[in-house]
Length: 620
Ligand SMILES: [Ca+2]
Ligand SMILES: [Ca+2]
Image (cartoon, rainbow, N blue to C red; front, top):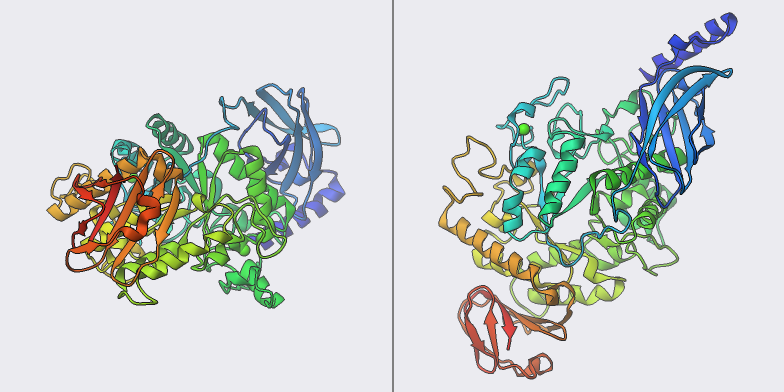
């Protein structure tokens, strides 16, 4: 297709070269992106990508007070124009015509709009450690609109029997159940990507973007996504958008007619990434390994975008800013963060944070060693001179060691001591309090499976995540002990939430048909999350923990000037007396503690801790 169009252009040029120039009918305008913009942005520059037949042969003109064309970039493909505007801080909201001319004669015109920003837009507060994030896979949570389950023109249609097919969940379904999310105590929602994935199969997960400016119609529309944001906001819930700068879907519209020959890496011969993320800081890494990591494709269906092309680099940045401003986002979860390379991730994060200084972005770096993660966090001085503006990272080291701590036998070097020691590497992070901690997510076995469906361990893990430093993230369905039968089966991990579909016989929103154990778990999570919500001592209090003595206990304290909370995790099979004298630094002045879940009060000098239990004691 690409070759065909190019040769067509050449043929046309030869024909018209002898006959004179192309006529107005030969030009066609298909897209202008971003779809609109705003006045009063911090950065006065804006890149417009204009796409359509032979657009590249035309010259844009704009006559609007405060808006000037800074420069025009043309590429080897004459179906594109990249127009850089300067929008002065005095420019007023309104619409203007972009006229596209040939030899001073207008061939096409497009009306472009500059909108007014919402009050406080630049100062918006991103998600932070006072929040608990609920992660939802939109196709699998609730079907609020059965009419959009299959959409004409989109090959991947409804098939609820296929774990990897589309199940019909959508944005309306999430809006319909915001009250449930709110009542559970969650104050932020992160949805797996919602942009168009016009892929043949497995499009439900959303990680193969085929249009960066369009919500997938099977999920809803841009307007509905914005409505979700507004409805969430009313309940004090912040919306976090999942974004992917590293790759697009192979059916992305520009793959048939790319703006430049280097728009994606390895356009002609498939090369897969080696996934060796450590090449980016390894002092001994070879160039070939590093290049294969950043430039290789994630998978065959996801072409690797070449962000070292400045036009693409800008395109993606303006796209991210557009969504923040348009949808009122309070944060971004950035997929496969290191894969787009250090330099670009610095530029992307810094330009977003310059525009929104209180915003938050959490990057996915699936490293299990804090030293691999720490270098990415804003303010890091490790290992050398690299510093980006990324405020937060997904805390994979804590997730991994939490599972080890809960499931492995206590010994000198295994069990709780793993967790204790992993936390000691917090020294490497500029801001450990801003890391996102979690027990599971959409890419790994359900937490309940990871702890071998042991309910006591489940409660211990949840207690840890909700009382530890950081920003907890919770995967939908974990509150009702959802578990996947087959190890690492993504389709099963992202199972439908019961009650989200009219025909469901079980309903986790109402509790109808749920087993007692699932109801119990849900009530436990609800109590825990709501308690955390109202306790700043957990949001930003200090932390002190005590070395586990391989007897099955792990004890830590969260404290500030007003309050001290003692957390006791006990893996022992029988009730045990806990000697508390070595905790004197934190117990000074306190004699009793009341468990926030059971309401039971314990004397601190003579504490009998129930078998296999977790206690969150508010000290008095
Ligand atoms: Ca639907
Ligand atoms: Ca890449």
